[in-house]
Image (cartoon, rainbow over all chains, first blue to last red; front, side, top):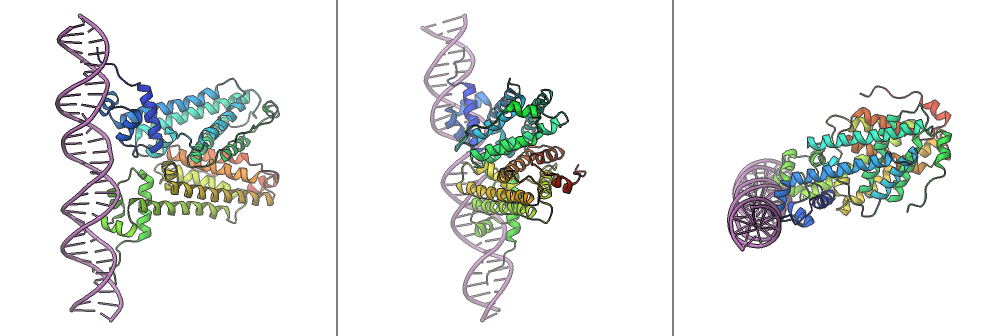
Length: 209
Length: 209
DNA sequence: CGAGTTGTAGACTGCTTGTTCCAGAACCGT
DNA sequence: ACGGTTCTGGAACAAGCAGTCTACAACTCG
């Protein structure tokens, strides 16, 4: 019976996500959002409730896909160590572009974790999930004999969280792609790789200018 | 001849710095600043020019002291490797507190680097300086025979930038001190320490709850 | 085809924002 | 003590803000 919407909800959320990621929550006005999404004022309020609610939708969506991206790579069919290297490289490539699309997850974590409990708990949950994925991947590598069995898989998992978050932050701050890539590849040296692991990995890095 | 000021300029900047670090540039109103600094409206405009100018003063000051803190540790009399470990540990301790004071440098980098060229270039310059300090420290360690001479000192320097920035970001996002400390200590494993280095470092970590 | 429901568009409302203006108070060197 | 200069505090300002209200348009189902 009702008149059908002239917009796609998922598309609106995605545009809002990009806008919020670019200028932050406090720095984005409702008019900015209307322009970015093409919605009319009232449509936005009918469909989402308000600025904060739309932000949370965008933020949760971005967080979910960020977590998902890690999970997908960490459970792929590649060699366990190669999965982590893939993630490091892709992080450098994504966040090292000249006009790299900002990550709302990172922005919200820095801007709002301190003041908004819901954002804070979402960030914490996402972080735990990502950490577990890395840890599981390291454990896989240990079982495959690619990493020394007496290494602390969980410590390495949390460690890679820090490295990748650091790369994202620095990328946002303007650090070049090649520098980020160097960071990522250097971080792999903290992993005690067995002779078998080295053999399986082969010689690394292509040309990532 | 003129009436003397009733406030200390450096003190005002420091209070402004804390306020901006807590709530960001866009999220901090002039009234917030007046309350935090105790200044009257007109006094703030007379002395600093406006919100943006006061922010830049606070931002530049915070950046300078962040750089300085790194330089001080990296050129201290400690063993080169111990300097880096000290920096890692202190980062974990500072940013891992329950109500850790936020770093304006990090916030500004994430919030404004993308839109404000002056902030961006300041961040870049500071980053290069910090990176150089780490690199020089690694080179020191190589000369002292604590790190393998064929290691890439610059790669390790940039790498520690990423690790420490990642720890800061995650600390801000709510990660616990112990977890940050684990990240920091794990990151040291990426350094190819010589037998002599191991001997000099001795057995590590105290109790950092 | 028409009645009912929902989306849309834009004017509108308080409120907050950053900034300026103005009158008076406080201080210093003479 | 006084004149000149600066600081101070509050009122005033225009612009921008998130959110609301109302009239109209569009679509579906009976």
